[in-house]
Length: 333
Image (cartoon, rainbow, N blue to C red; front, top):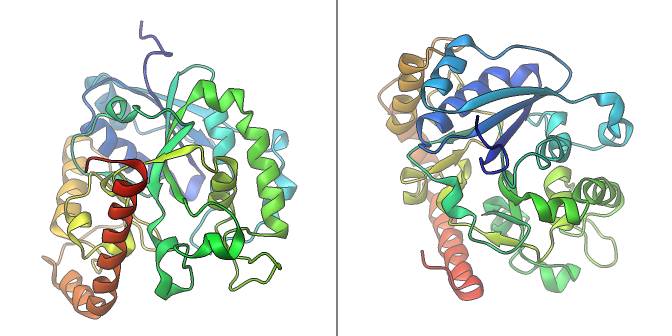
């Protein structure tokens, strides 16, 4: 019988719309993680059994898959429903702290992974738990783009808060610290504060340079301010930098934005992505709702041409973030 406390607990949260996406993400994790994991799907607003083929595949790899149902009646739903979100973001993302809370009591190490994430190569989650803070994560790339209305490079002088800002799509968490800091309560409080004033977008006078629709991510950053450790960018490479070497060699890809990795369109799809999707279909037996026909990278090449100028700017930000890690955190990258 596996020791849950010793095994890493990996938790996903999804609604019915993202169930298939979540299963493909879990399959990519199981395929690329040799150490046994206990993987949880936290379902909100629906009940659906995981695919039998996925369960069988995970068992063959030594992993365990469990389903938990989060009761909306026990969550601060009214407060959550009032939060503004981008159209492509499900409201369940606001409830990720509840999903984490459900597993920290049974595992000493927890990883939270968004449904729109693909694990691209063999990884070892345990090897990354070498930090002394509560959380480890990757910088939120988009928030450091000074040419896109974000400019967190300079935001400390404007807002007075830490300029360290993580992306909440991939989190590594020490359970004892989560419980000791009562982070679920802290998250709800910070979400409430954020609804009145975003410290990362507003200045000290309350002026807002643009609407903030990343409430869950801002609330988590407020919750763990100065209590998180940056991971190498390759552990959560976000889709805007899909035409850089970091995306090409990503360990984990995060398909932010409205077009996810199961989209029928090939505009953001390279050979590495289609190879993994086909491998999951072939070896795990998962099916997509629509047939994906690959165009051998034609649309992806056109996308590269369209965003060539922006990509050169993105590369500058990538270098800045690596320099920041090496300087601030003495990382060996």
